[in-house]
Amino acid sequence: MSGSDRHPAGRSNPFDPGYFDTTELRDFGFAAVGENVKIARNCTIIGLQNIRIGNDVRIDGQVVIAAHTGSLVLGDHIHIGGSCYLGCAGGIELADFAGLSQGVRIYSATDDYSGGALTNPTVPHGYLKLKVGPVVLGRHAIVGSGSVILPKIAVGEGVAVGALSLVTKSLPDWGIYAGTPARRIHSRSKELLAFEARLLAERTVS
Image (cartoon, rainbow, N blue to C red; front, side, top):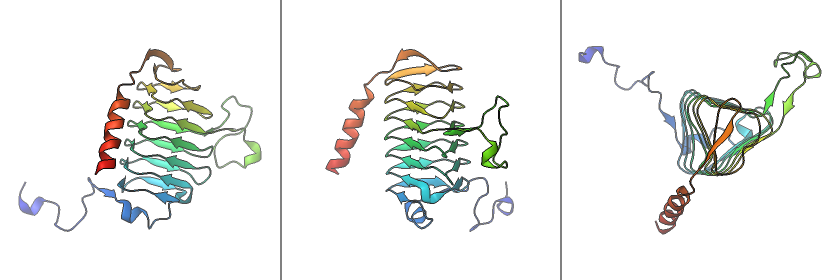
């Protein structure tokens, strides 16, 4: 590629829009923004006033967060991979060290698909039959690519959810779950807690 064919200097690259940093994000109207926070510039986030973000958080490109009702609370050391969707009407919380791989969908409110009511947000609320309730991911919970989590679910501490899983009920601590619906297939090692302790100790010293 010749110099004349390259993207002109000084212009943003449409293929690499980059990230907003903590300083910029604190001017946008979030309820709280901690230290070392990065959010991709091509995310769609609605309801900033209902979103609280801890320290050391990164949200990658094409993530959609709908928090015009409800709330989103992110702890420390949180990663949300690209193309995730978080519907926050019933409330969503990710505790410290929790993470979402690419394309995870979390719904804290869903329509009734049985035909017993109308569906979709263009319909007046009185014609809907919604299931609404908080979704909480415990410390060190991790959710694999393409998985879906439905309302009123607690994903316990240390839980790992395999890719393309459907989580329809709460998952007890320190298990590995996979499938549709997700079922426990193994215990998860707690060895990672030693690494957490080392990291936090180093941070305290520095």
